[in-house]
Length: 164
Image (cartoon, rainbow, N blue to C red):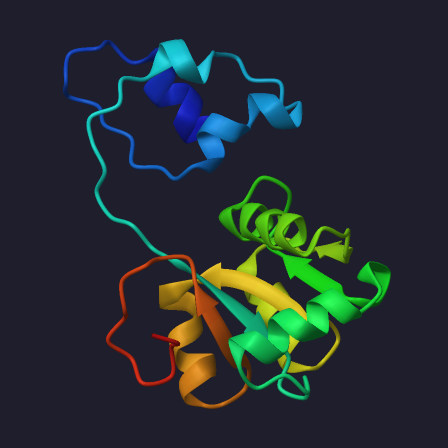
C-alpha cells in the first residue's frame, strides 16, 4: 500500500507512474480504508497488457473437457465444489465469482494469500477448481499437474496445453 500512497501523493507532473492491475480499483468496494480515492488520485494512461484467465481443475477431477466440467458443475451440489482463489478482489476471485454465476450456485470457496498457494492446493487435490492467469499456469499445465478447461478470451492461445 505504501507505493500506492506515494504515487497518489506525487505531483501530477508525469514523472511518477504506477503500473497496477484491477485490484486498485476494487479496494474501496472491498471495504479497504485508503488515504486517497483511487478515482481521483490517478489518471489512466492506457492498457499495457491483457492476461486471460484459465479455468483449471485438480489433476484427479473426472472431467477432461470443458463440456464435462460444465456438466459436473451443473449436477454437483454447489457446496461440494471446492473453489480456490488468490484472495478477495483478485482477478482469480472475480473469475471464480463469474464461474459461480454461470453455474447459478455458490461453491465452497477458499481464499488463499496469492495464486501460488492456491495452485499448490489444486495440484495436491485439496480444491477442485481455480481460475489463474495465463503466465502462471503454463508450467503446471505442461507438466500435467493440473487440468485446463477454458480461457476467458475469445482468441486462441499459442500453447498446446491451453484450450483453444
